[in-house]
Image (cartoon, rainbow, N blue to C red):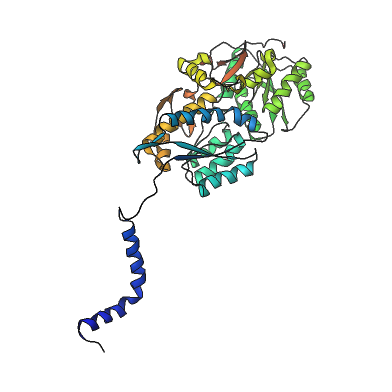
Length: 418
């Protein structure tokens, strides 16, 4: 038996000994995190993750639409010292972490989760295509990553945006506000009927549905609506049926693989309606490069022309300098650039915090190449769109709708095929 101070100490040790090791570990950790006791890892770059169609059927859209934007914007930001991060009080260079989704939906979703969960990228930038964004948006929202979309519409996605506060849509699309502007143009010209060919995917189904609503409001009768599979080769039966219908307007709500053969077969079969409009593809420079004078009078979706404003002319001159003519995108490019100018301004105010970034984008107005730019209910407000409907006129894809944003009046009826 021990007595005195030594005995008292051992008695206390017996009482607390079972807690001694955990307590020692906690104390060790606490000391280790005291400033100056350890060396923290300094952040040297901002990593932005993307899953993009670098190969496969969708690569032609991805390469021509959003890719020229990030190919030019990121080097510009880095040349200016990088992206300012307020919590670090300094600028950091941007590094892009890009995985090829091979134009495959499941690969894209796996890539997106890998970027978020394994790579832990600082920011997420978008996949390409309406259906791909429809699949990617819930993933980004689930993990609280802000996602500003690029190439892809959102008629169906729009209804989901109230439950996905981290998702913001930059591109104009069917009912925001393309088809309504087109219906107004046709009604003003006295058109009474339209024939629709649409691709059997989310894009085509959405546009066909919105046209049925908007054209009906203006007394324009849809005399035919035929869906086509993505791999269709012969469109002549549909072109013949459209020609026989006598419709004032032919609308091809599809992608280049369907729109381009429709142009060729319309000419071959002598089908020249008063208005001929095609979906994605018509808006790209490669349409004019490939078809030459055949494009005269063909309509499609757009947002701007060099004549839209001095700012947009300067933007086009900057973006397309050194690029071949077929890299031009007269629909998406200004909206993507404006959206990511907006993104940069927001990040440089709130930094890496995704919650604060979401709130900043939701509530802010910033001046971009589009002028006053802001989001309403997750959509870039339609007042920020410089245009909606375009038409090839003398080698230029002019804005013809809505009327108040025209860079040239609509040529109606369309000229004969050359």
